[in-house]
Length: 134
Image 1 (spheres, helix red, strand yellow):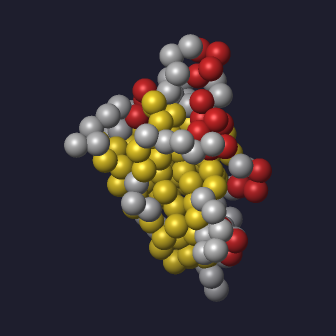
Image 2: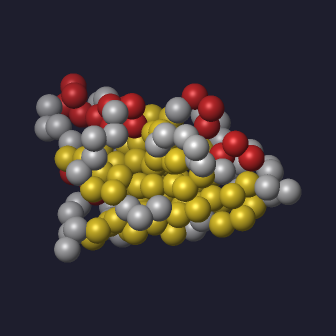
């Protein structure tokens, strides 16, 4: 059964850190562009950080650059998001999502960016709550 399951969310003080995990089953993450999205109260869903299929080119939205790091573990078929220096405005439900990636190397390089900027994903997780508050 195809499934994405997020975990690792919680309550953290400003400046703190969290690591989110997304365990995939039923399909290989390496063949998909995959990434993290978030939805804050009263706001739409936005792409935060995504990885292209294949070599794994990464993309970050401007306001998380230098603070968040996306990675994947092929052996565990799991995606991670390390979040440091968290701010109250990072508070949101975080989702992981995956979209079958292109096979042409030139297009593969930007597959992650494309996913984050237009999240027409094939699969979505259920989300995990991240709350940054003092």
